[in-house]
Amino acid sequence: MKFYPFSNIQTNNLGLLLFAARLSAICGCLAIVVSLLSAGYGFFFGKTTEPTQLENGLMILGADHSPGFYAFAGVTFSFGIVAFVVSGILAALISMENKFTGNNDAQ
Image (cartoon, rainbow, N blue to C red):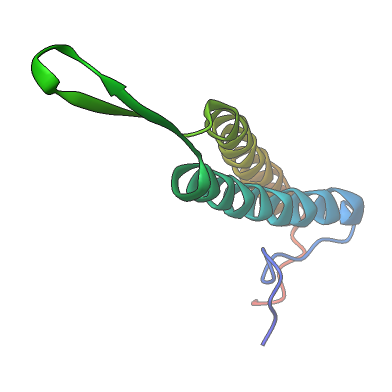
């Protein structure tokens, strides 16, 4: 059992491109995990402001759930999605190269 992405794609000429596709898929997966963890950390451990007294005895509790964590999570999540798209395009190029050069082992 192989645990790396695109394990069933084979190539003779584009080995470095296949490595780049696998690396970008792994980086995309890690970026999405990091973004989800940072958003969760910002939500659960974000700064909560003190209650503010309003009119008629009402109080409001304002929560500042660390917008920096959310911005980081958004940018990192976007990077992860772009990395997956780039990885898929590279894998498609490698697959087309294998198909057009006739290097199929399943003949």
